[in-house]
Length: 332
Ligand code: PBG
Image 1: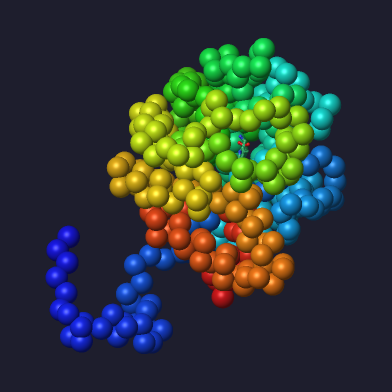
Image 2: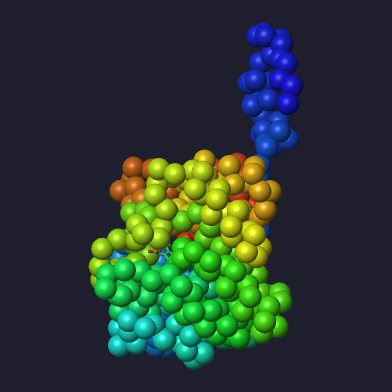
């Protein structure tokens, strides 16, 4: 790009900032309701909403309440949601078979939501942690996270979730080869149109801890996820991971967490030109909420500024717990 500018005072950048109309005309990126994916948490029971202590404003909802919440989201124009289950402790095992039970909580929630709100896209994670007595995203044997054995479980989970009506599957486990295994299984079973949004660059981050409270996977977790999630110091590795996932059949890719990794979003978008999303994770949400509740930040402005940053960095959309709140503001 040629950048030839007259020197001051012929060039005064402030001229274009003097009025709202001018700022509106020259704004380079725009955030809309259509950019938002709303992650929600579901729990067993009826007419229940259990607040998540570390995520003010977020609650685990029973399926009937989740259906109502998603109806509201659809009215606001939110195009898609993601559903995470808070699995009962008694159903967690080291072999994780609840993950592919066709009547598990997340499959029941998916069927109920698709029936009531067929126009909204439903995304589900593919990973074992909500079902694992060991708290990890993969099977654990002798303290090691098994890769290829985990893939067999992820394939079963993929097929159960596709059967339940999921539109988007999000492998969040970071096992090697998962996208190819999932894509092969989906094609083989005739689910040609189920899309995969891979968590392509997912970092071993401290910002996930409120989420682990919400789904109840934190307590069981021994050790950390550094043998499968990425080292926060790496960029080139994120590009290799993304290249692999796209080559294996991912339709969209995701960077996670969001704000601390906007440089990764920007590079992934530039290198691949594929649909790129970021996950503004639980800890990012908690930070903004906590500061706002303390009166240290204007919560609404911090929310909108953080979401706009994702669009500026090159995201096609953002997974955010702020989705309904932001949607209400965006719709005026
Ligand atoms: C599970 C999963 C996690 C998140 C999404 N899917 C947690 C983890 O990997 O430990 C985090 C989401 C958030 O923090 O909001 N594989």
